[in-house]
Length: 477
Image (cartoon, rainbow, N blue to C red; front, side):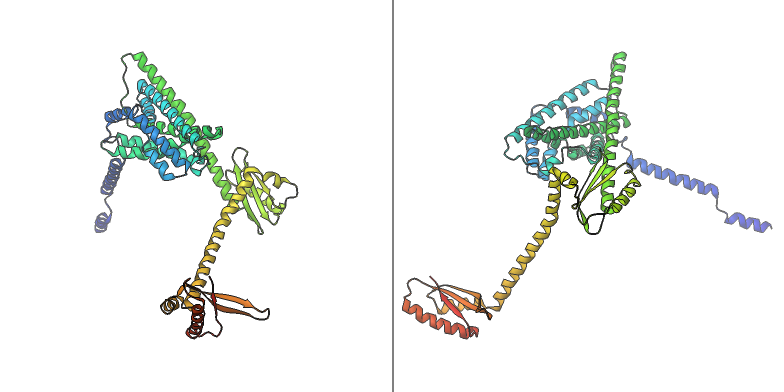
């Protein structure tokens, strides 16, 4: 019995040792993750504050760099060149005052905040003025895709601004030169193109474009400043101290109020844009997967978050009302689309509603979609026809040894100026035949008698050479 107990003790794992091993493993993982993601130990707070303050002033070289970069960006937007727009954003100095605003609010530096706001205002005014003058004087006023993409913010613009701002301020807090690289990359958060689009909208008198573009710029600027504020707080940047305790409290309260005013609307805006994006994605998915009927094709569909409507335009066979009712039932059961109305417009609609709806922008959109869908197919067919025609020509050339024959003709008949070959299709309305035709042109100094003799010899020689019973040789001047 004792032996059995001893054996049981030997084979039972040591729970205390296992617990120690588990705690050691957990501690090792925590240490690894801390070293991997910790940015406090390698952050130079004083140097970061100094670098941010240095980028705020706007004068001299910075002003000219901004003007030139605005011109470059405007040209890129005007010709819809993404590469040119990116290049302009990389040399733009617009980011400095925006980061200065976020940092100054975080450390209660009212003087830096004042300088940042002043310089940002001057930069924005000069940017819009430069873009306005360019588009006013430019003969190219077409609405390019690059311009239209900057007329209203989307959830993607907000996300890029947030993560771009976070990447920028985190890089600027690190000791070393990585900050300069991230600084250039963060400019690609689209600060300059919206300002150029504001100038474009003002130049052509389209206030909706100008308003949407300045809205997009404001959103980007706010979220970049907000990202700077959050990182500065997390890294516990030293607060600016004031000799007067009452002034210090007043400044702290003002900074907190500004942070609150910026953060609350930003969060609300983010949630609203997220709702719009989710609505549009769900609406597109519903139409692409559910709204289908054999014999009818969807040529256009639109979704409107404000009115909660999805409009679908069909051509082809009429869709029965029963099918449309089934679609509406499924729509009411779709997450995030419970309150949405599905409106179907068909080509066979006798009520005139389709004709009324298919006007202006909607009709243009449908025609554009049809053109885009068919243009590639037509181009492919044209390319195929051209390829086959070339192949037929090559086959004919290969069947007829024109190169070899022309070289031999040139040696034997140096009086000839040109020599050509073709097939002529002839018919007597009873029979259709293909007749080989040789066209020749003699040099001007060759007499008529010599030409006649040469033509006879050439005819006999070609018939023998080509083994043809029917051959026509035509002389032309």
